[in-house]
Image 1 (spheres, rainbow, N blue to C red):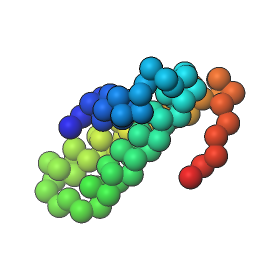
Image 2 (cartoon, rainbow, N blue to C red):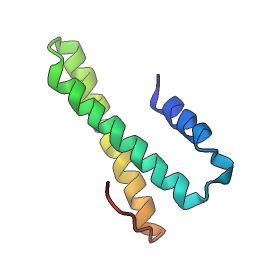
Image 3 (cartoon, helix red, strand yellow):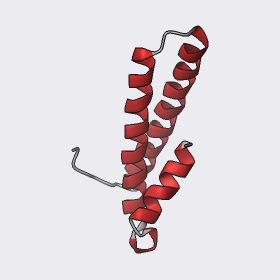
Length: 83
């Protein structure tokens, strides 16, 4: 399942219509962090060179997405507790 599908499912499960913009951003940050952690875990276990390349791209993509979302939160002056 793609990252976008994961976000969409999470938002549906959380009744996205009831969430404000800050909550949506924080939820996206949380989901992206989990996806990044998963990408790192996958990288640690794969041995096939093509899968290693795939994991490298996935890690980089999730890092960029995470940085983007964090910058958005900073611009909105959002402060959240780290779990």
